[in-house]
Image (cartoon, rainbow over all chains, first blue to last red):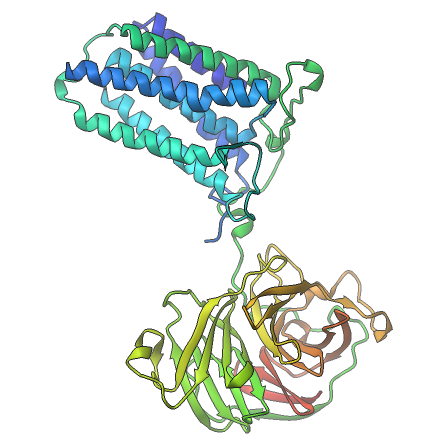
Length: 55
Length: 485
């Protein structure tokens, strides 16, 4: 899944550099990538979503 | 001029972010040294890539609020990821951790700093930004911006390669313990372990219920053939306590009982009819003492009160206490004790468990505590702390002595006992379990349970004291049951 997210980031970076007129598409991909990162981190830490320290 | 300076600073920041943490991680740690990020490291790295990418957005389209806002959100999520990840290893012994170190600190701890710097830098750039800096249409990147963009793409492309080898295509996902990186497909491990069903929790293994004597099981306990203790008499505390009692101890030298309540410390005569002195400790000063759960007389008349969280206070009875100086330690009766120490017992095996008892052994000059099971961990652990430095010196899980003639019932074990009171006499620890109302005898040298006796009629015991050949069991309602030792 990290592979997929990095591919999306690579495509988004390419759009910003080489196809700047596709700003809306680039921003959409950027938001998707951010949410995807949050989702994957949450999946990985679902058994203890908060930092595993003394409370 | 100012605007150009801003874009140049931003381009340098994107370049630095792409080269130093992300580029070094993939080219040096990954490709050169074979380091593979774990699943959390991957997300932290991706978060940094996203902050850099948003920097490119700003260089290209200007500092639009949606870009700055998103960058701040990603960076604070990154700080959270850094804390979450560092928290897993922060309390380990010096030098211990996970995976590679950079400049003496493990990689995941650097994420905290990098995201924090990113937030700080964005705040600075925002302060330097004016309304007219918002661009209507895409602007040329310039030489520095183009360099930052190209380097970013190269670094991300390298990460795509590493991610494909280390984590695989969807639905495969990063792993908790990844194997080292290799360009050879023969060594690639693609895993679905992170998708396996698991309970969702906020605090995970740290979500532990507070101890107490409510709802504990009664009836026959883990030891099938425990004889019944000889009940000598039943009494009741003859004075009023502020709150319910939490433990009991006895000192033969001064012929006094020690009783604790939630935060109260009482010294009473040996008939438990009169209070000789008392105080109420300010449990919130300096150390969170929690609710007192254990009490013991130490050397030289000093008394110990231990909280259920293993924080403790040592008090010395005196008639010369300075009431004004003691204001910070006590809430009542300021001139009857001096505070000698206030700190915390640290444990290893008992770390994730509360305690409800404490005892002092003059022979070894040590304090003992015994754990109570909880919703996460069920284990009977006896911990010994040397009185000289109040530091953990021994820890063990007692077993049933082979020659005790006792047998375990069904699937129950000694870990099912819920010790709420303990005392030490003649090298043995006596422990009362509120679950199954059972009195245990633990040989501290052999680390074995050598005897177990049922004590029917004892209700919600919270304390235990040895007085001559008697054991005094204190109930939460102030009743005292005296059995032969």
